[in-house]
Image (cartoon, rainbow, N blue to C red):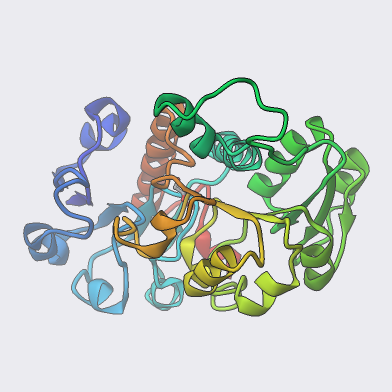
Length: 321
Ligand code: DGY
C-alpha cells in the first residue's frame, strides 16, 4: 500500500493510483503532517509520497518497516532525516529541475518588487496618497549596474543570475563548487562569503537548509552587508536568523528584504517582520505555477514507482550526502 500524504489532483498521481492501492491524506489546508489514520497505516506502507511539511524521521521509519521508498514532491529535503533513510536502505526521491524557472521567477519578482518599493507604492496609490507627480517620492534602487550576490550557485541560483544579468546586474557568487561555464556565460565572479556580503547590492539565497547553512545570514552577516542592500530569500527560512533580520531592517543595517520562505510557515501575522514596511513576505510560492506543480507531482510519482520496483530513482536525495 502507498501513502500519499496529501490530496493532489487525480490526474497528477494517476500513474501511481492506477497501479497500487493508495491511501491519500487530506488537503494541506487541513493538516501539515501525517494525519493519525495515515500514521496508523504506516506498518503496511511500501511507498510514501510526501510534502515538505511532513517530518520523515527515524520514529516514522521505525513505524514503517516495509517502506521501500520515500518520494518528496519538492527539491528541498530538509524535513527528511536522510541519514536515517540511508541507514534503512530507503532511497529518497525529490524533484530538482522542474521547478527551477518558476522559483527563479519568484526570486526576480521579489527583487524587482523590493527594489522599486511596490508594496508601499501600490498601497499609496490605492489608499489616496497619490498626489501630483513628485520628483523625489517613492525612489527605489536601480538594478542596472548594481551587483547581485548569489549564495548557492545550483540550478535555481544560476537561473536567477541569468535573469538578473538580463537586467544589467553584475553577478558575484559564493558556492561550494566552482561554476566555470556560468562564470564565462555571465561574467560572474566567485568570491568569498564575506566579499559577497560586502560587495553586493542584492544578496539572493539559494542554498539548501543544512547544518552548515542554518542561520548563515546572522547578525554578523547582516552587518557586513551594505546599508543600502536588499536580501532575497527563496531557499528556506532557516538560512536566515530572523531575529537578527528584524533588527537589521529596524535599525537600517540593510535597506529591505523580500522573503518567500520563513520560519515558521505560515509566519504568524503578528510576527514583527510583517510590521516592517521594508519587508515583503510571500507565502512560499516559488514553485506555485500550474505546470510546475503538476511536473513536480509527476516526477515524485516516477521516483516512487522506480523505488517500488527497486530501480534507481531519477533523483535520489541520498546522492547529495
Ligand atoms: C522545494 O521544492 O523545495 C520548494 O521549496 C517548494 O517548491
